[in-house]
Length: 80
Image 1: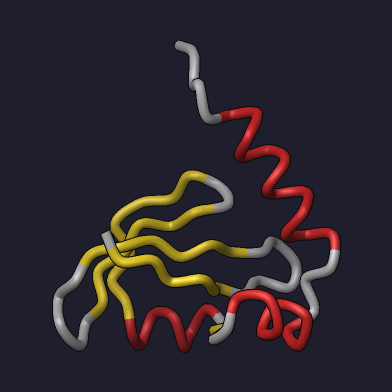
Image 2: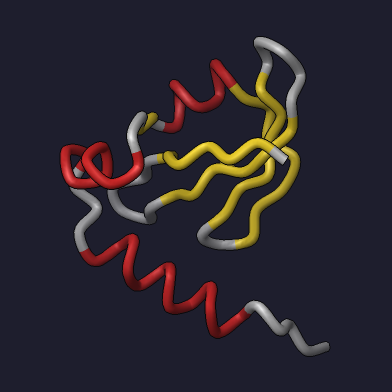
């Protein structure tokens, strides 16, 4: 099965993980969450690296977050 987004996602994974310090991510994307903070605020529906599809608990809105691998941070909320 072919995934037309695979190359773009691979490039984005490398870019995000290249400098995954919290302060750097906050500068670029705004709010940055740890895994437990993300789980407090969102319900995860699926992953496709570097994206996670989730639903915001406060209002039920669906959208995506990006995530870095190590350290694991979630950031860049985009509502659908």
